[in-house]
Amino acid sequence: MPHSTRTAFDDSPDPEAWVGPNGRDRQDQARDTQGEPWSELDSSAARPNGTNGSGRGDEPGSGTSGVEPRLRSLSVEQFLELNIPPRGMVLGPWLPEKGLVMVHSPRGVGKTHFALAVAYAVASGGEFLGFKAPAPRRVVYLDGEMPANAMQLRLAALVSGFRSDPPDPSFFKILSADLIDRGLPDLASAAGQEEIDTAIGDAELILADNISTLVRSGKENEAEGWLPVQGWALAQRRAGRSVLFVHHAGKAGLQRGTSRREDVLDSVISLRRPKDYQPEQGARFELHFEKSRGFFGDDARSFEARYEERDGAALWTRTEIADAELGRVVDALRDGMSIREAADALGIHRSKVERLKKKAVEGGLIGG
Image (cartoon, rainbow, N blue to C red; front, side):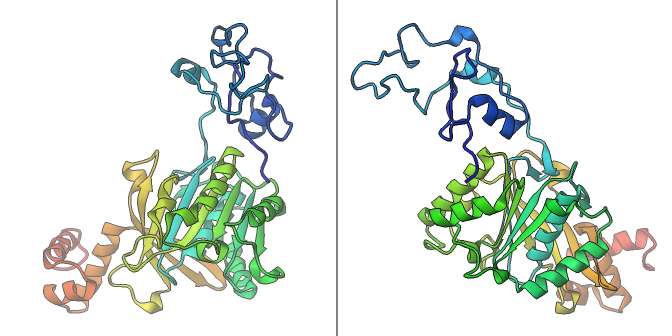
């Protein structure tokens, strides 16, 4: 299991006074999860003499008997005095350190292509679709769905087409259900979580692809069925790790099942096919941020992405949605379509086609 992190704060000036449930002292745990120990609370906030820190002594019924309680509330002053380092970015701007995120789409849109590229960019300290990893980080990819041969082919294309140097071999590891006797364990069970925790080792980012295959206990539409997985994800966050869940979208386009999955998440990304999508275009989709905690404006702007393979190498392109729509209108008008025909073919309103035609004429893309 990931090591426990500090859930209660001892305001004693003695740094050895707090010992976690796994026997590690406060300094060790803070150093593991944050890089440097958290600052001690001001000695003026120390417990009153002869009390257990709650203003009560060890009288019968206090529940302490001289043992430090696990839960200790902090005053606002004490909380603000804590030296808690800011969260850096694993892949900016939407995947922070100790971040919990989800990407979802209908089946066949390209979410595994997307998740693999995210994993490779993080492991190599590279860039993907304009998202940047400031430094390489250890990644483990939990693949609960893909045939091993198909995953191998996708990875080979990704490695061939990626612009940054390959990651250190220890920085990108895969657990493939197709290669494991009885597959990957159930992430909703305590035994399954313990087995996964042992396997992920020192990973800093976990990608769970996907919820349907990795979470097999409980009912998908019931909030209570998600609670064990949510608890596991929060434990990973306390241990300093980030988690990216890959999930299917329902018929309405939202993530399938209970909305409670989104409560503790920092970011939720939806991959959607454009209205004029054609099957021969492969993995072409619009990326929309449905939840964007801590970032906004241009950082949270939607765009269109496309995945292609050329000579066995993966190629990703990013186009702003407005530019993509303009290009499609120009193509339709060049093909001789009327305003009405272009609007029907592209699935956009006639007035918008007219505006884009005017813009195209002004830009010299088509004749007046």
